[in-house]
Length: 435
Ligand SMILES: [Zn+2]
Image (cartoon, rainbow, N blue to C red):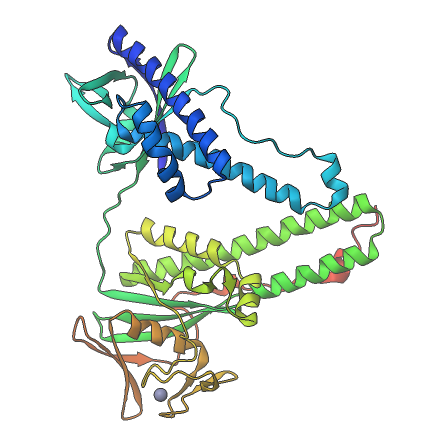
């Protein structure tokens, strides 16, 4: 998604006046909605709609209903951000709270922005000019000439438009046009299933073209980096007494830690996306929503995993890189994937014996890292995992393929030595701070 700013010229004087009156009404609507929302301490969209929509609609019957909707949405967003500030402020220790004043409730002073819902505007070409047509109310359209839109129009091809904004800055009018990138993504037959762990990203690459599947693991040292820097932080806190110096050092090493972890994330995600590209495989990963249950994390172990591995960042980055290469990303339910038997479906915590998975029911024994990937495979409504004469096979329901699994390789099909390095030793670091 990106936003393009272009200058608008109202086609007639009437268009300009209509725009100013719209701005006037729109601002009053936000004020009124904010009043109601603050008075009722409204925090949900549903409730805001209930208490604002009808009232505003009656007071401003001449406006397109989407302006009403956008107005209370803005008011709600203002109130919510105030509530967030307030909560933060309340959590401060009393000492600090005295210094920082109580956040004041939101007020609309000046407003020079009108939110344009996607239903309220259109871009039209007329005699080689690009025209913005805003539907103010039934039968009333405001027309603007869009100036210097060449750079904008290039990104318009094959793109979707999103909710946009009109900005009125003194005598100038601008359009902040939101463009949603709409890369054509085809579904690919081949799939790359991944399971993220604290020391590795474990993968199953199913290649239907060659009737072959490969299990491999991309090892990384993010956890090591994290624990190493945690030690560094602790020793700085213990040994450096000067508070100014301590703060400075903590910031410095905090920055380095972030940089290192980010570097690993980039390398792992690029590697995975490159594998996807090379094998024409879509990505299938777990849903991040499964990681949280009613806002609380499921288990200590998962908690730890999440605290050492920046999971969300990883996923955002990974998805982006797959989309960038025109590959799809699918999400699969990941509940119990590490304790479910991929062959018979039996779920038991005791199936997990240290580094091995041993099914208590059918005896299926396998490297624990790959079990989650195999389960993702069967859950993606793609197939069955089975053993025939001692060998592992994947059977796809969709493509009716039988695929043999190659378990031996422990490394990615592409060289990934770059993902590991020796951790920095603390003794080296503690020599520096004697300034
Ligand atoms: Zn089993």
